[in-house]
Amino acid sequence: MITEFIKQVGKTLPLPESDLVDFLSKFKTIHLKKGEYFITEGQLKKELGLIVKGCMFCYYNKDGEQVIDEFSLENEFITDYFSYLTNSPAEKNVKCIEDTELLVLSFEILKSEYSNNSNYEKIGRIMAEGLFINWHNKAKSLMLDDAESRYLKLISKRPDLLQRIPQYLIASYLNVKPETLSRIRKKIASK
Amino acid sequence: MITEFIKQVGKTLPLPESDLVDFLSKFKTIHLKKGEYFITEGQLKKELGLIVKGCMFCYYNKDGEQVIDEFSLENEFITDYFSYLTNSPAEKNVKCIEDTELLVLSFEILKSEYSNNSNYEKIGRIMAEGLFINWHNKAKSLMLDDAESRYLKLISKRPDLLQRIPQYLIASYLNVKPETLSRIRKKIASK
DNA sequence: GAGACTCCTTGACATAGATCAAGAAACTAT
DNA sequence: ATAGTTTCTTGATCTATGTCAAGGAGTCTC
Image (cartoon, rainbow over all chains, first blue to last red; front, side):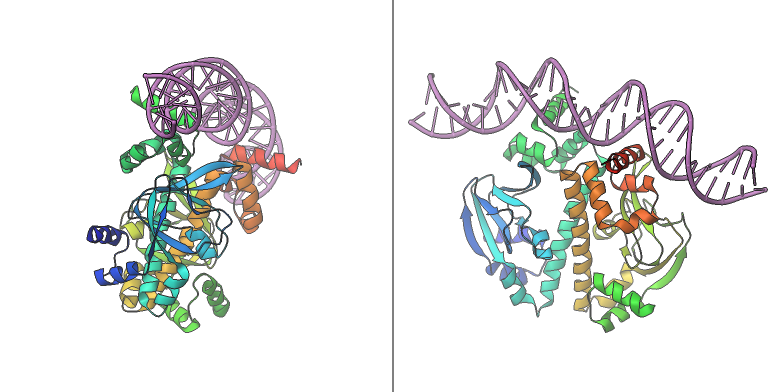
């Protein structure tokens, strides 16, 4: 259990196991119900989350409408890192799709514990690299692919999401309307 | 000259001045003519560039058509960092819009010089953070803004680009066709 | 200064995806 | 199971942007 969790987190954050255990020991556990928020727009929330069990999504508001930029499942970190880096209020909302058990750590603690330790730079580097890769792929897909290709890529890269997440949220993540995703699926099925 | 340059680079890479001078001393200078490439698709190019004088753009190929993701001007770093991080061939092309003087450093040297030095983690962290912020903003704009808003934001945030870069390249950067940008400009002018 | 480029504009039409409206299907709770 | 809610599908339009085609404006070369 704990060891499997640590192993999974180690894939994202490749530190020596003892450092990783030490790092994780600084987190505290919270529980959020389905529909509750971890972060809301406008908040100055300087906490890093790490999902133990459950599932969340991040969205921006576009004239009152949700536009989802990410889903996060078990063993994944979740935060508004942009807001943290730029020291500005959160621009996004992070909401639970399922009841979720979350480890949280304030960035202040992270900083103070690690500031005289090269692991701080390393953790920061790895976090930022992972986020860069995610957002790079996202932007590239929006630049180069049409809606159908984005959906096909999602199916092949994250099939787990389709089992757990309602289709209208998937649509938002793909940056199309639910009607459009429904039509794309129909078209693909007929091939 | 050199001090002003170092000062500008220091804004991107806030290291103590002596570290920064040391870091920059490892680069070598190259000169590229307008139209020449620093990186081409498929290459395993593991070099970091830093523009001293000139102007370049990065683009992806979409069925033979250029889709520009970034312009880089003086004092800015340029590389295919995604390709470096994932250790895969370059997916993008980096081409000079003007004759360009470039400082270059292989990532191998960077690694070997710094691997026993927390500055390596720090440089990596700052690079990745900057790229994360850029790509985050780019993806967010593609998700949330229409073409006209993207153009208006560009005007206000990077007016220098409009002076130096032909409009059809700006259009590609905004992810629209030149005809569309022309119409957007006409519409804005008539307001 | 006449071609010959390259870039920008404009018009007419095409298309991907959005919007609106109505039902059908799938959950949820009693 | 039944009613009530939420999600998904489908059809009929609409809109932003793309495509194609032509012409104009600017620049370079001889």
